[in-house]
Length: 309
Image (cartoon, rainbow, N blue to C red; front, side, top):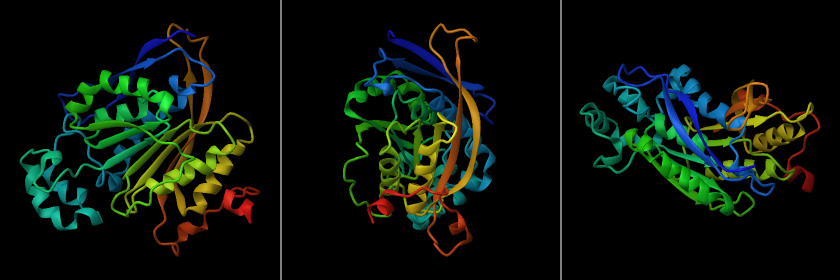
């Protein structure tokens, strides 16, 4: 199939009278080949791109660790203390409250860049991370395999004005899940990790969970957002992924199912392929004695480490 450029509309859920109801993300998709599935924007990516602002808008406690763009939501100085209540920022709370109350960006504070860091795994065309960068003032790092990077970088440049307006920073890099990951300090991880339509081979569930464990920040507000298509009735790859995640002391905060569509430029309503997807929000269980440890892996599913014993 030939290359094409498409526009995806993402709801802003804005409380700012001056902001539009949606932002348009421009995505280029090179000719699709069997070896480069990351050159197509699949249904799960579009669903996750729209789900992120919905989740954060409906979760008052979670908003404390998130930075909406002032373009979407005006700064509310009364909430600044909550935004910087994590262990990384305890000594800076009062100073940052005054700094933001003046409308000054966190990226240029006297204490360095305090914007939360976000990692996207298997970013593909970049829709999920780029949509989030248009709505939130954070530092985004979009990653994939080497063959996907040139087009991913192209899409970042096509949407750079949206990120700049939100005072976001977006970078691109290669990240191979099968490689050995660096041992990061608890302060050096990412506040949020994003992954959409990431399982294409039996070993991907283990690799993906290992990578998430290596890079997610050790903080109560850190979250992983996942959206996966339901390709078969038994969804064995989902069960394996859950088992691997549970083995790393990750727990599900919320989950559900929704329907999207795989379509192509010029396709009609009748041409679209309906895709049912499973979405989930995960957190790291820092206290292993808490009741959340009652979550169990799916029956009959073993992790890679258990299989090796």
